[in-house]
Image 1 (cartoon, rainbow, N blue to C red):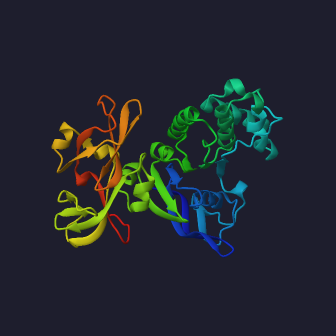
Image 2 (image 1 turned 120 degrees about the vertical axis):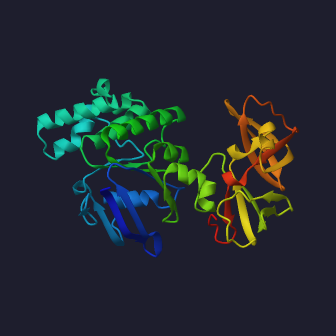
Length: 360
């Protein structure tokens, strides 16, 4: 598939501080890539390098086969949507959408046509004569997206565009952005620290830490086969449960001596049978009651905390002396102090090398 954005051996230093190091990333034409990670991991910095808002220290950036490493932002064929709406308060929505095109000297008929098309796609046609002060947060962000849309570019860059919105609006606009991508089929690079946004929007997710991409894969792979402990702990809400211990024979022996069979885990062939390891199991892969009876590992635990979530319930307990959580249907009545039987199959989990933290 044709490459849309190609980042080759990219490094960026602020003085002695290395922010991005020898980073490579190939983004296909029409792909939706999400750069995901906590504050300070380098995701927005990478986006700003692609946009031309930061000068790189080393490496090259290509957009549609053209080397744009030292091109001005306006010459890169990109449209950018920021976290803050950055709308001109004294201008109407129509004027905000058309301002950049008017400054560029575009013909009036073409400007009118592009504004009309963007307003139609984003369903903001009734708002064109309003000023930003008379718009809701979600409407303002739609206008900000529209301002990028009228440029009619091949690559859209989004820098945490939904983080200033409340939960309901975020959810609604996520769907709008997904629909926008399916309709336009443009390349989109989207920065967020919100894993739900990443999992729901992305064709592929690049999880970053300290300026390095830890894993680049589709959401299903990222969730079910995290490449290391960092990725496993970052993705998932609540996060994956971790037990420290060692592999011995066909079992994982937790630090308190609890023995968990790992024969069903597919990557252990040829591994040392006496290696320190970390066992990870997601809350939804721990089963309760009758469903637990079919699992290779079962044990009795006591419920410590119950969190009703509407359609499901999260329960906290202890396994091998470590606090863990599991997820079950809200139809199952659970109370603090209840003794229940839980079980799981390590084949649904992950085992990590305790020293390298890499997934086995």
